[in-house]
Amino acid sequence: MQRQMQTGGSAKVDVDATHRYGDLVVHDQLRFSVAENEFLCICGPSGCGKTTLLDMLAGILEPSEGRVLIDGAPADPKRQSISFVFQEPSTFPWLNVWDNVATGLRIRGTPREAIAAKVEEIVRIVGLTGFEKFYPHQISGGMKQRVAIARAFVTDADLILMDEPFVSLDQPTRERMQAEVLDIWRHRRRTVVFVTHNLEEAVYLGDRILILSAKPARIVAELDVSLARPRDPLSKEFMELRASCVRWLHAPGTV
Amino acid sequence: MLTMVWNLASLALALALWQLASVLAASPFFPGPMKIVEAFVQLASRGDTFGHSLWTHSWASIERVLVGFGLGVLLGVPLGLLMGLYPKVYAGTRSVLEPFRFIPPIAWIPLAIIFFSGLTRFAFLIFLGAFFPVFTSTLVGVARVEPIHRKVGVVHGAGKLWTLVHVVVPTVMPDIMAGMRVGLGTAWLTIVAAELAGGISTGLGRMMTNYAELLQVPHVIVGMLLIGFIGFVMNEMLLIVEKRLFRWRWQVSL
Image (cartoon, rainbow over all chains, first blue to last red; front, side, top):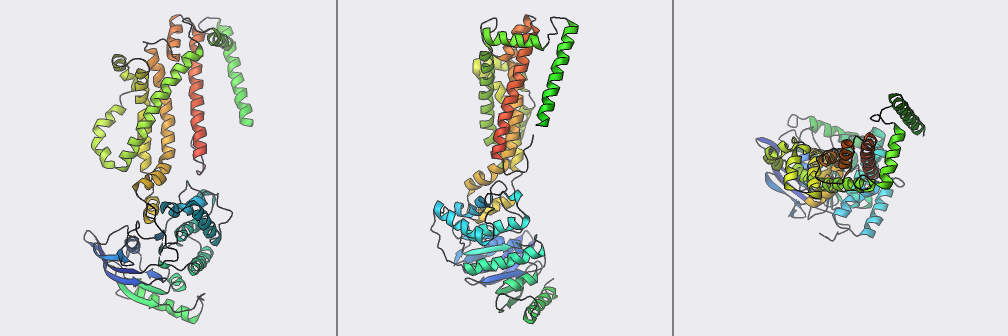
């Protein structure tokens, strides 16, 4: 299945969905949109169904009711260009760094020369040049996650979904990766939905933050982050925003 | 390097003790290594009492093993993958399939003698011996496929075939290779037993029975050592393939 990849594309997402597992309501009429090129962060208490929500956005899980639309069409990874960075290690241990990064491009039938150029560029951006021939077991956890991030960004997907991608990293690596993701995102404007339970991370990265409640998940707050980048986590405005996120997260209706 | 020195030393010591014991025993039924070498040279240069050379016997056995073993892999791997990917198929057919696993291939020899002849007979028996180790380890290996690896493919728009080729097969490959090495062992076990049962004039097992009837112990031992040697070489060859295939792994299982 050869498909023309529109480069520089960016998706608009509309969600209006309720999801249940049997009697358990995971999402109760979740309704929100993500604008083109927007960096949206979603926060919530653990177990609020963030991963389920991302699966619905990726089109690999259908909501019980309602729908998830990407550029007006139901989410479907075979039709739309979507990328996903997972929380857990997801590199293929049998492929070296280069082949891992190229995976998404190969699935989408990108021509060989184009793959070489794209992979080379993204590997440079995430700082893995020189490690192309290394297998995942030969590199650190932080580097493996960078491979996964490179794999997600290299496809020039219109929509990039990230599920707590830095949760397993130590603080310095995490900070560097956050800066790197913003850098990549600045280079190639894309719509990003970033799930995290780390509020500081959300305020640091997002254009906008949605706070979800515990199950059944609803949107309890929507905060615009209008701070200029790069943001200073120690500035007064940053701290205030973070504090209001904390208040929402601990509000009686949230937990 | 040092391991090699130790191995050569222990081998030399074992041979020396054997030679010594045979000299002390001074019996035609307890030949020493020198007698074995003599028998080997005789079999290799002049052939056996029927004029079949050692090469003819060895190749006859190897050919049977390769055909039967190949069939076992050719059927065991796809069936293992199929039943691993669709556990319901396995659950629904277990009662038909599993009892066969407990019928040793040698228990099939009487029927094989009635129904088949020549290469087909041996290929059938060896197939029975090689199939289950390969099938079972493939089946078990499929359960090792990480859901996250499937998901990586799916979110990038991959279909079932891509997942099979690029996720399932690489994950299961180490198990398939391990099953193949176990299956190869069973195949050798079976070929000798099957050839001992008779009905043909070639094969290392056949050669051994011939000489056992003539009470020629050295020639029987030549057959035994050759079986061990060929099996060892085949296993080493599989290990080399494994090492090339699994450069991504921490280590290769032994």
